[in-house]
Length: 199
Image: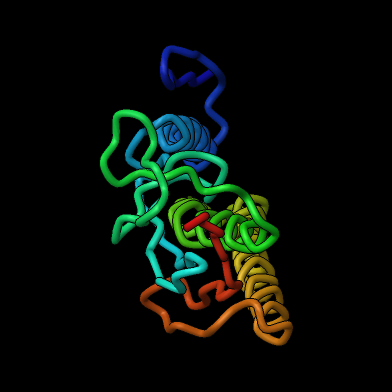
């Protein structure tokens, strides 16, 4: 019986395609774990939203990282006059949570999933399906399996992005979001955040 060694395991060799698929599954798992643990992909992109400070009526930009846009000290530009900065910082102020922050957080989570996580995973699945399709040769079982992987990947991507469009269209219809174009995540939350400062 012909055997093959794949990452230290020895097993019967039924076809060249199955060995490649086994290797691809292990590589996918390794990349997936690295992707989840890598600080490069751990919400490194800073996001912003606007607040209005009353009674002065001045507009300020709040910069935050992660999903939660409130309830902690955040960088605010320009500095908020009449409000004490957080201890040990020059331009960080405590921003209390308000109902609008829920929509800002939902937008951050959706953008992270759809713009950071889905594209590389879908690309890896398309590559794995394409390689399986190529290596299937005359084996109808492998050919059908590769075809089902590609079909499922296409259907999954269509469902994910269609749901994104439906959610954002609903938020736009309610008046909570604005269309900003393809470069900034398609939609931006425009819910007014007001910070009351005692004069």
